[in-house]
Length: 158
Image (cartoon, rainbow, N blue to C red; front, side):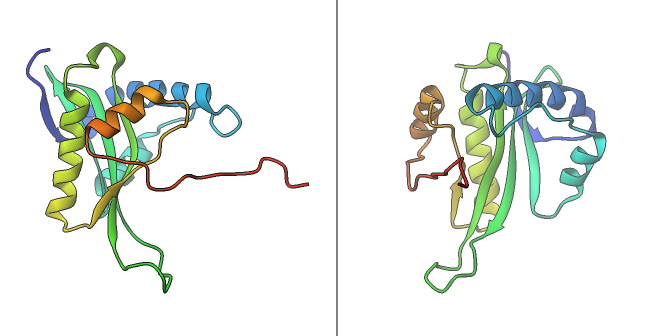
């Protein structure tokens, strides 16, 4: 794989980011069609993130084009008496173009997300993954993540 540069996304990355989000959303629909559909990523969506104080999109750039990204958000733990008052980097979205995978790009993006958190003195990093995404879980485990909690739900309100 050619030289990969990790950097903050800019308005010039929007078209490549739309392509990456489409791939990400197609995966989400495949894993959980009851919850996901293909969305529209408007210029305003991206501009809101670019202008935000608590979130960014970090891209993996090869030859001037984003081939992967991680959308990071700084969140505060819920203010509940039994929870420690901590801040977290939440990986809202993460995708590497399929033809660019297995070249260390995802690991570089995770490293950049961790560095983003260190710079902002957060306590830990968190994300969610679909239960059937075995390859994704292996990737996250190789990058220091471990299962801490399971989300369960009931589809019927009867």
